[in-house]
Image 1 (cartoon, rainbow, N blue to C red):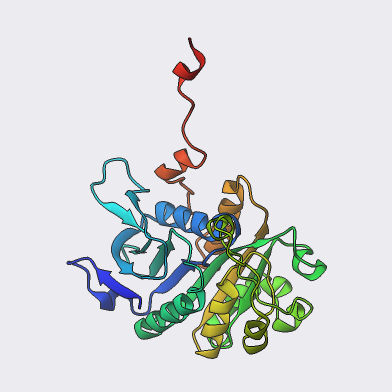
Image 2 (image 1 turned 120 degrees about the vertical axis):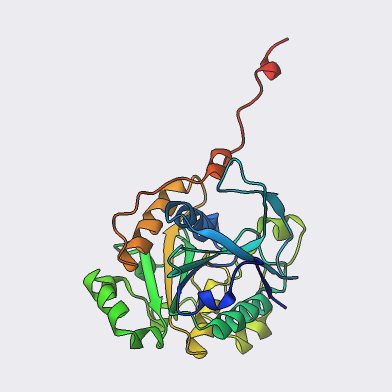
Length: 284
């Protein structure tokens, strides 16, 4: 069960009617997570609480956004803007094997209980495995739940951006008719069977968006549950994905009508590829 633990001085009602942004679970290159890092830093959001979940790999580390902070970061936390209009969930570790759908359900139930204005779901997608429909023109593709289509002012923004030209529909994905779990390297290293069983495909038919992990399943759940959600997927490949995160963050800024944001790299990005080798390694 997903349990929200707010800071002692935070009123949970402050989340109501704010815009929620969160990354997809287990998505390729952690594009969603990198983009969330940029948004938290550049929009100067503050940590207002964290979650306790048995379905994510446990981690703990230094504050990723400041040099002189005394708090420790955990695997799933929530941040909010000073004006309380934007809330962001950051998820820093993958879902434990065989618990993806349970985690999706828990997240959905919590989001439904808060009554956010609408939700933005950010995910990477595997450009090396996409079909022509997925890869033509813009690397950004979107999907909207029916509930989101009822919010006229936001949909006017979508039309202004001409995102209707890059919108996908379930029919566009039918030729890839199986569920992509995009399992983590940890699972593969441990020798787990990463092929979904045939009965799972039959009982839970979800179109394949390669590399999105559980993001499409979350979109489906919110669609069926009448949650207004915009699913933003960015097609890329594994590697140095900083540029991809910046481009996706700018698209999020466009969606929120925040086009003058000065994008600031988080302190933790200095260590994305490790530190410099010690000079003593090369001296006798």
